[in-house]
Length: 166
Image (tube, rainbow, N blue to C red; front, side, top):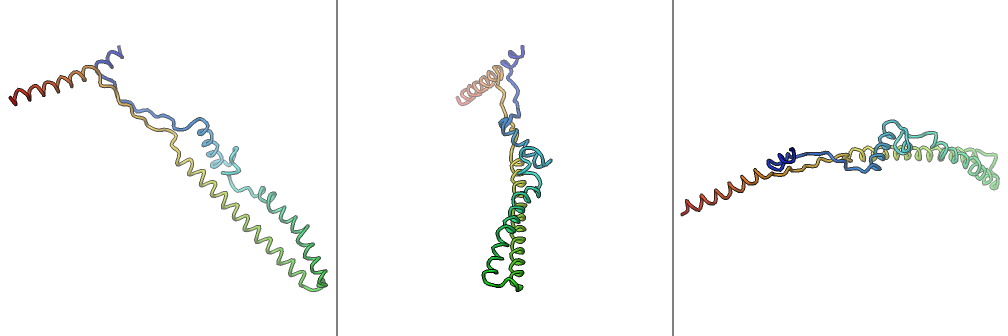
C-alpha cells in the first residue's frame, strides 16, 4: 500500500547523515583524542604531556655520561700535556665546558617541549578539521498523478494559448 501511494503521489525528500570516515580513520581519531585528553593510549607519547623521564633517559643521562667519560678527561689531558694542571685554567675550562653542556641540554629540552606542543596542535587541528558525517540530500520522486497533472496543465496552457492567438 505504501509503494502504491508513493507511486501515485510521489515520495518525500530525505536528508541522511552518512559517515565520511572509514572505520580505521575513526579508530585513529579516537586514539588521537585519547592521547590529547587523557595522555594515555598508543599515541600518548606523541600527543600526551612532555615526558621528562624519557628525555632524561634518552638525552640528559647519555650527554652527562659522555661529558664525564670523554670531555673532562680530554680537557685534563690537554692541560697535562701543556703543563698547566696546577693553575686555574683547567678549572675554568671544566667550568666553561659544564656551562656549555648545561646550555645545550636546556636548548634541547626547549626544542623537545616545543615539538610536543606542535604535535598536540597538529592532533587538535586534525580532529577539528575532520567531518565525521556528511548530510546527503535525496530528492523524492514526483509520482504519477502530480506528473500527469503537470503534463496536463502544460498541454492545456499551450492549447489555450493557441486558441486565443487564433
